[in-house]
Image (cartoon, rainbow, N blue to C red; front, side, top):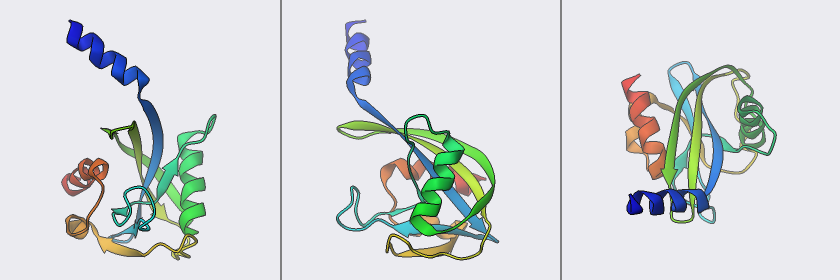
Length: 141
C-alpha cells in the first residue's frame, strides 16, 4: 500500500504532455518525417503532429500541427489509438489519428527530411520508444 501511494504521488507530480499524431495515408503509403538533430529525440523518424494547446480540441490541434509542419491538408480523420509513455521528466499521452491526404503534396515547411513509405516498411525506420506501440498497432491493422 505504501509503495502504491508513492507511485501515485510520482505520477501526480510528473508533467503530462498531450500530443496529437497523424498517420497520413495517400494510397498505400504513409507520411513520415525525421526529427532534426537539435530536437528532443533528434534523428528519430516520426509521424507529423505536436502538442495540444490549452482549450484546443484534439482534431483542431491535429489539423493545425500537420498544416504547420508539412503544409498537408488532411481529411477523413478517425481516432486510432491512444498511447501513454513515460520519459524521465514527463509523460506523453499520444492521441493517434488516421487521416487521408487531401492535397497530395508536401511542402516541408520545417525543413525536416520526409518521405512516403509503405506500412510494412515502417519497422525499418528508427522511431522513438513511444511510437513503437503505434507501429505495432498499424502492422496489426
